[in-house]
Image 1 (spheres, rainbow, N blue to C red):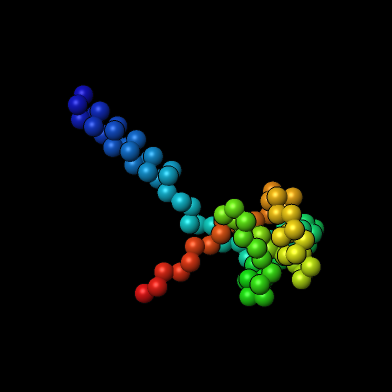
Image 2: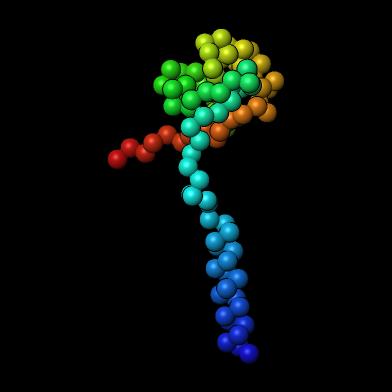
Length: 94
């Protein structure tokens, strides 16, 4: 009986740890909808390289054109529910 309870406890612990682990099988998205003009798709890498993004309350929003960042910055709360990703953490220096 004691062995059965120990085994059950180990199984429950292992399964809860597996559920809590982040899912790394999904690749990071390469495209996202513009936060202002929601019908337009934006390449995340290209938008980052050209500075067409803004960070707001721990999230990063991407834009399709040069006019969208100023519209977003004028009233970010208006667009906060639109497509975004978590603000990337800075790379650690070696």
